[in-house]
Length: 290
Image (cartoon, rainbow, N blue to C red; front, side):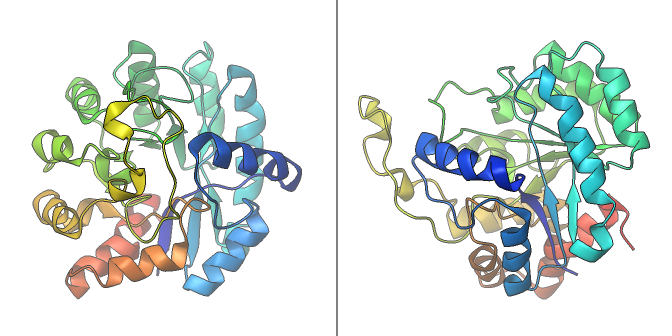
């Protein structure tokens, strides 16, 4: 079984206006149009059994609608291969009720994005959310590291996640982008070996060239395409040090191609047993999928 633990999709009318805006904001190209239909076509091409959809509540008022849509998506998961997590905003004062209702509706996990939710990963508002999510037996997955759509003021650094982990010791914590996009040296220093999961999204495979929008930032004058993907050597080193049993395959579709990401993973130099864990067995266990 192959499970892509990190994808995004939107209702058709929302995707039509949202995907172009996000592509322009991040100065990147999309590989699908962001709809469930094209995600399923991509899954079929890549021979992926399940894709986890990760919505983000960028405003407190979006939470209810997002979680209702997630629950509806999950009603047909066995037929479509699409499993949707829910979300909650740090400013939702009734977060306990929201998260309890999400669990009761069958949602298996919650996506948090410190940048889009304008709250640092070790802020008390985030910590109380993760504590509640964990106590309900749900999975917490974070965007981790820098973000193509924002400047380098980091809201989701490995250090912040280390602080969060040391306060709560959550058992079902997943950090996207191998623990911290473009901050992998800090991932090695602070996070490797902790009992948390890292997903491979937006770190493997090809990427269409893009340039920083703000050319005044001296450290970003070169095309980001030269530094946005982790090196093969560092990827393998993190897998070995952290443990293949705590790595989850993810593509970040539509911002990466599922087939290309899988091809890169398959040929990066890991053992068959390691690949089997990363591509599906770890996610299958975490999600309690038969």
